[in-house]
Image 1: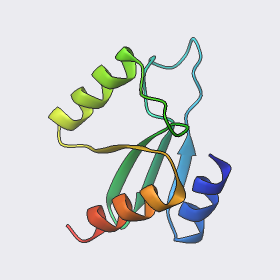
Image 2: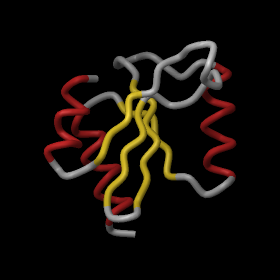
Image 3: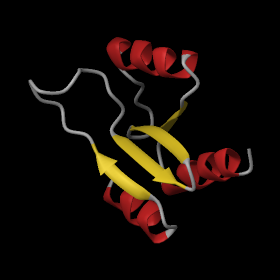
Length: 88
């Protein structure tokens, strides 16, 4: 995940790493990145892994309200997703 955060910050994104705790809603994606009024919600997974059922439901709810959400496995995935969001 550190490589993804480093990439985003290098591209000018403000990045927040969420931390699961008693004070945060469960299932929230790992990273929130903001640049130029665009907000990315990123669930970071290792290759071959999938979001949990709770994470998948949360992702679906975010998409339903218009959020830009993706499950990413690499910097390349983030680059592609961020590029698509930035281009509209």
